[in-house]
Length: 155
Image (cartoon, rainbow, N blue to C red):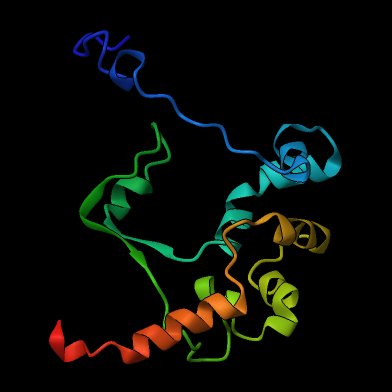
């Protein structure tokens, strides 16, 4: 227990309970398994997370402190931390983040694989159907239509 925290600090002394998320068996096997595929996934989990992320992380950080290879690695933020959301249409033809969910969907797997040579096609194909937050084309179209009707001069 942290000395400065009272016994009821966390979860309001038992009044707050977190629900469990039903994780698809395929993903559970990747996180807890010991197969070659699971070991590969765990070794490159950050890469897989990034290829399915809607936004990217933005921050101003102390680069000198991050280069310190003699002591404990430290990531110190200076200023704002934000999530960067790309334009809806890729400027140079290469989609990333949210763009991957509706731009050139016929080549979705290849577009994701092109983001890193660490990715395995078999894993990407396995993760896509388990990703509960992937919007379908109708959802994206509804968002786009609603935003076209919004008058920006009123905000």
